[in-house]
Amino acid sequence: MRLAETPCENPRFFAHGIKQMPARIIDGKAIAQQIRDDLAARIAAVREGLGRSPHLAIAIVGDDPASHVYVRNKLRTAEDSGMGVTLETLPGDSTLDETLAVVERFNMSAQIDGILVQSPLPAGMGRNAAQRVFDTIDPGKDVDGFSPISAGHLSQKRSGFAPCTPAGIIEMLDRERLAIEGARAVVIGRSDIVGKPMAMLLMHRNATVTVCHSRTRDLPGVAREADILVAAIGRAGLVTQDFVKPGAVVIDVGMNRVTDADEARQLLASQPKRLKLFERRGSVLVGDVHPNVAETAGALTPVPGGVGPLTIAMLMANTVRAAELRLSG
Ligand code: NAP
Image: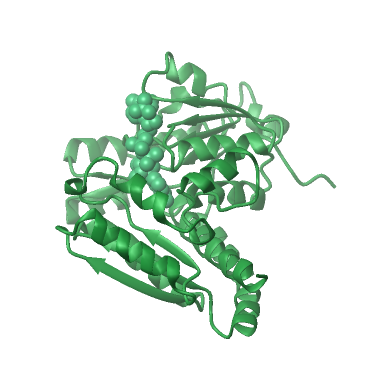
């Protein structure tokens, strides 16, 4: 039996003249849990071999509330998975040198397998601060996959750490048995942490990949070519139905906090519960994909509960792998 299925091979997706079924909503939380469950035996083996659990160290600079929420989620997931954690919190007026000193300390520690410095760094550290930090992280501990060594390894399809968000998306496509090979993939966004590595990973899996950005001409027309459409833009609801070929797999990476009531009403018209949440809290998290794309796509990741949990699960997977590499010498 052939398990993989591309949108173009499933007659449901191209039922011309017949009312399109709503997209299958992919449960990122459940897939993330499967990934973590699959790590349990490997974590136990590391514990036996090294005499300690795989260990993730995170540094955060400043008091950006969203960043602190992300860091708490990562630490809680690591602890729930039976891993060791270290958190170093630096004040917002710390210098780049002070931050690099923390990274160096993490690099030197034989107790630490994976290092993550939460982005964004305070603007006061200068334009190249993040790059300097990524340059300093030991590539053997670069579980975020942002160092130039990791990026080079990925580009050359060599073994190394791939950035967690695109790696999680590939894992999700595989676990959902959505075929990548031969598919037309369009990635909107060309950042170093999502768009570029996403395109690279899809290409390595034999998709035919187009990368779009803010200067792309006829973005909806290019996007409509896609069997697999990845939106990593940072613009709430930018990807509307006219961007989507019927039956396409649509992956929504965007995480945008909407505080404007009209915008929230427009985006959440079909989601009364979430609109109520907005009315209570005054803000809501939405993706780059307009919710009404569910009427056109074959499969769609929700925000929240789609790509976000997968990103954290892959951070755990990369940290376990870093510990295994230490174990194997
Ligand atoms: P980024 O560095 O700001 O990159 C955004 C990309 O989108 C750029 O390449 C930009 O083009 C492109 N873009 C912006 N406006 C556009 C437009 N109107 N039309 C076409 N392309 C446009 O952002 P990022 O770090 O890649 O993150 C993207 C989104 O993903 C954000 O919402 C972020 O919060 C979210 N995110 C989520 C996760 C997760 O775990 N779920 C992880 C990482 C990021 P140019 O290059 O031409 O400027």
